Amino acid sequence: MKLSSIVVTLILTVGVSYYVYTPLPAAIEEPLKLMLLDALFRAMMQVGDLCQCLGLSHHITVIRGTISGLESLGEIAGGQRGGVRVSDVDFDRVPVRVYEPPAAGGGEGGLRRAVMFYHGGGWALGATKMGSYDVLCRQMSDELNAVVVSVEYRLAPEVHFPVQYEDCLAAAKHFLEPGILGKLSVDPQRVAVSGDSAGGNLAAAVAQQISVDDSVSVKFSVQALIYPVLQGLDLNTPSHQQNHNIPILHRFIMARFWLLYLGVDTSLHPLLLSPSFLHHPSIPPSVRSHLNWTTLLPAKHIKHYKPVGMETGSQEVTGQEGDLLPGLLDVRAAPLLAKQGVLGRTPRAYILTCEYDVLRDDGLMYTRRLQDAGVTVSSRHYDDGFHGALSFAHWPFFFDVGKRMIRGYMDWLQENL
Ligand SMILES: *[C@@H]1O[C@H](CO)[C@@H](O)[C@H](O)[C@H]1NC(C)=O
Image 1 (tube, rainbow, N blue to C red):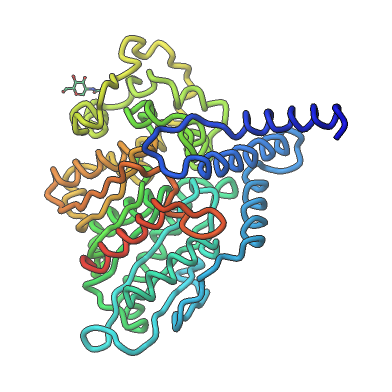
Image 2 (cartoon, rainbow, N blue to C red):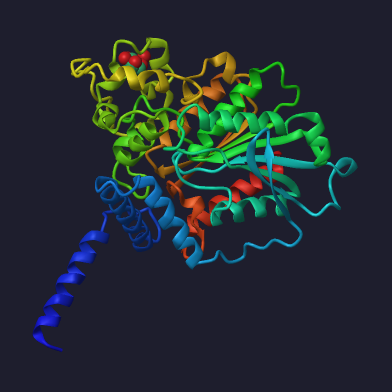
């Protein structure tokens, strides 16, 4: 080999290693795999940003295209589940994918359990047909002998809040109609609502609305929330501080998803992340108490973290918050802010949280608020978990912790639905 090619190889190796390397907590298993996955996501975002800068296309379009390209490369193995029947239909004009287990062997009188599922992806990415979600829904249908309905709600940037929520709510109301449940042989006493990440946000918000809507006679019997997003007013909770740079949901990406969801200008990014934002005078103290982590979180999760931004007060107020606050204060976008009376009417809950996730404290605070309202909550915390792990349980990106999460989630539904 010529000296020049050795030098080039060396420079490339160092460059790639530098790009891929991210310091990770020791508790995270399979760190190299996670670094590679994170580098891939970062590269996707950067290419997306570049394309958007050049006026070629929206960065989200680029990321969606890359994800589906990668998916078609690695056709997910093990996706076929015996007799599960899949059909794509509309529920009150909202496209849904319905998974039905083989007809025989239901419970009482042949009636089956059911799960309404909302996929994650920051209200902007993901799809029912996406490999990991499709496989998960098939597995649920097969193992639980349940009818699973996965909702193809519309996404940002094409639409923004409250459209995603309204699509999910419309699909839920349609599904819960006694005639529809009857047609699908579903036991009306055993219908779950569930979702991961932004899907967990939608599931929590829809569960609240269904619980208090007297025009809906059949209610969800359980809610299963997987590392849900539950508020956007305080992006400086201990978990946001601790995990701001942990793959794959970096804190600045979470803030970007909020802006996309609310359909507000990206120039508000610094304001949303600013520690003083929570202390804005137009946020009522009662709302602030609903996400006050100094009182809602257990000490072992607060660790050494302190509230930030108190000193600066509202000095940084810029007048732009008028675009942000109405959405962030709306319980349909931020279910953690619901009144206790509403929370108390929501169904029994399963809430999965990960130690290495900016959203950890959203889930833990919701757990506490639901419990204070008298709701039974199974809180499952993964000490070695990171955000999104559940979507990475299959080739080419599989993590043992993702497999364990799926197992735990299935087992809980098996016993509690
Ligand atoms: C949270 O509660 C504590 C104790 O009641 C209080 O001192 C603090 O000011 C509250 N924080 C916010 C942001 O409201």
